[in-house]
Image (tube, rainbow, N blue to C red):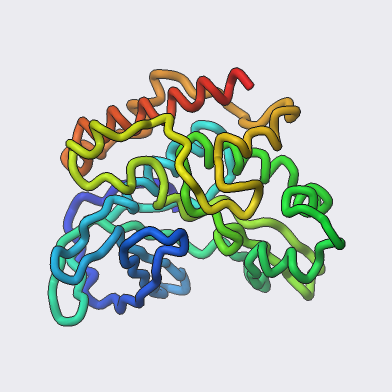
Amino acid sequence: MKTRIMKEKQDLTYLQWSNIRSSSGTAGTFLKSESTLNGVKKYYKLSNFDPVKGVIGHECINEIIVDRLLTILGVEHLNYELINADIEIEGKIYSTFLCASEDFKNRGESKIALDDYYRTNAEKGESHYDFCVRQGWKSYIDRMIAVDYLILNRDRHGANIEVLRNARAHTIRIAPLFDHGLSLLYSCISDDEATKFDIMEDKRCQNFIGGYSCYENLELIKDSRVIFGNALKPTDKDIIFEGLDNILSDVFMDKIWNMIYERYKIYENL
């Protein structure tokens, strides 16, 4: 499933939503659902939901922005759709944009969170980063660290990185990058908050690899020669935000682009 925006209203009131809490300690409720149609399984998730105010966040839009960014940079990742839909939660109808993705597991594969896989397979005293290098995942982890700095991902905990195993085929691989909602300006609700947001501030983040600072984590990859397959150019702004007019304000789009591109220039000069 490729990245696309479905602006025509869809009736998804049949979906059943379950509750998950932000693992990074941020306030908010995040709801998810799933469906299977013609053998294709889809996963859905909402932006930050408030029982009184409804959907108040824009984390789903962040997924689309980062999806497009990673496509430009040549980074393997999970693709998302952004869907305009009516949904039903506890008997009440809400109109919102949500995101959907398909299962990235191949037939016969099972998944395990990286933190669990590390606990059962790491050598004594081995760091999370060194463990991943030993597994042959250095390029993947280096790209992830660089991406999380560019978008200020606050939520790259050990379950937001997954290992896929096929016991019968004796194969193991690391899953494409996914779950980037709690990044960029997700904490800003209004244009005024977005205007005041410091795009270069090194906010505390929950990272399984490295420490709490996405900027300091760049030290882990400073000797890596090539991280991304492609360069980010000023003209890429139009690609990243195509179709998001009337969904995200100009203030947010300009601020998010400035955040990504200014951080990218710092990354380039490492």
